[in-house]
Image (tube, rainbow, N blue to C red):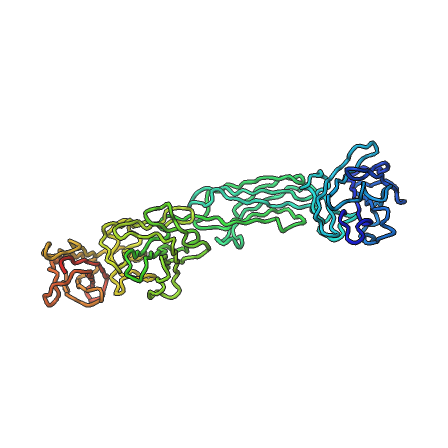
Length: 539
């Protein structure tokens, strides 16, 4: 205690400790002091014998006449000593500049020496952290308790038994789907005694690392000496898809449970096409913005944490969601360049992500919007080029099961609003509904009546249908012409259309819908196919 609280000159003290578990120490002839002067220790009627594990408290000779602040703090078994001078060292234990406290044996050999640092608040001593270690400054700290701990264990001294988890890591992280991994942890014995052998448990939980719910495995922890450490690793073949909370804890019952556990979040990948690009809006009208819609075609939820979106330049991939967010089976999420997406008639509770300046601008003549999971695994990519995308009309996916890079699997939206953000695509066939067994094809597309003369249309009925209807609509849903509405005994029909409506008026260039309905013998609808056609020509 060099910065005593009230009567600093008389309330300074120095404490000694016998670290031996079995040997007494006779302190007769020992001296303490500073770098300039040593003072011999003087008996206060308690002798000089310091018992194993015991404390000796050296008080200023004037303490008993001038103070009593330590009287109630000093344990009765403490050996009380003083010095043969009226102050420690040459001038007492100075605050500024600080002194070195030096202990010497009867032969004058230095037993211990510590240069304390100034800055302690009044009444807070300098205490050794680990009594069995040296006097390195890192092994000293300001006392936690007011007036220090004269004659008893230091307030900064570690508990006898304290095994701490100081590190938990996963390699690789992020974790690609179906990849093997290593879980590693570091344990440090921060207690005064050696630990006994125990186990380290590894577990996993939900992606937000809140609580563990599945034990991954365990490893044996050997006995660890004080201030020593141990490294342990558990190797696994892989983890389920998506992000995980990784947890670790040891089974030793120690005195400080606050450092017995650690957890971290592990970004994890998904199988390809777990989340797909379902609709693209690359040519917005004035006052609108670009956007891309994603769809979960599977049966399990997908955690969007860490998913990224980019265009053809895959080196710049902004993160869509930087926190845990689950997309349930059959649900949509929209990523947009601007908040004006919210002005569209979106379904209630649809998830929308606004990327702002991070948005990867989609080129009108061709680009590749691409989606990656949190581990950098490719989820989906749509390379469109020369697809004749009309302004203000989105590109809609026809089937989740068919290839993303197949132009035949994409059609301009035939919805009256020009797009279906957060809703079922106007041309979509979803997983579980099966591929259509009937078919409608036409050639050419775009169709220019002046150049091509007629549009050739082929109709193939499904096995359970006997009749078909083929009708031309505009994007507002107005019926323009019926091309077929009859039985098809052979199951196939070839139609030729000159591009005129029911009043024989030539249709203007633009986007139209060929609606086909297949019916059974009782007239019940069996299947519907809707495809878009571009009529070209001079306005």
